[in-house]
Image (cartoon, rainbow, N blue to C red; front, side, top):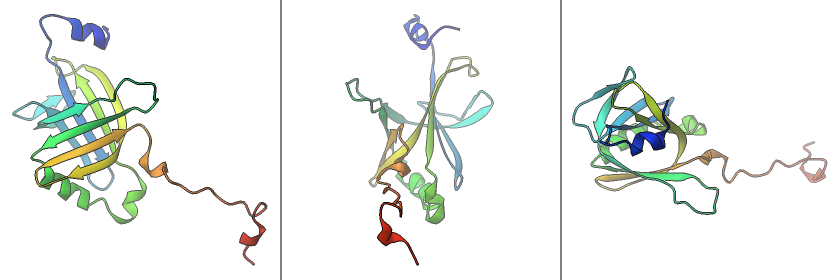
Length: 155
């Protein structure tokens, strides 16, 4: 099978379908395909049409891999989905899977699974920040050992 670099280098340009899938147990799967007018069946799964822009991480010396997705005119739909993500359900992160499908609509070329680390909304646009690190693991305090801190022993 040719690599992604070889596929992109072919002329004439082959059609590639960019998809994003958000998943959480409270709202299930939200599957979107970029730059399409009608719903698409890709590898047996139906993706809803959407317009989004993916900004990939910058090439630099830092080992941080992150991306930003910008959705236009979808703020009300995102708000409705995020309303279900409350209470105890916030202890599990929202995952986002970015995938590229070939023109035959069956072959998966490349797939990345990232976490949703931030979601900024205004009246019409939504910016979603994606990161490789689980945002729920940030700012977690260290566990104290009563052997080191004897004043913490209950009793």
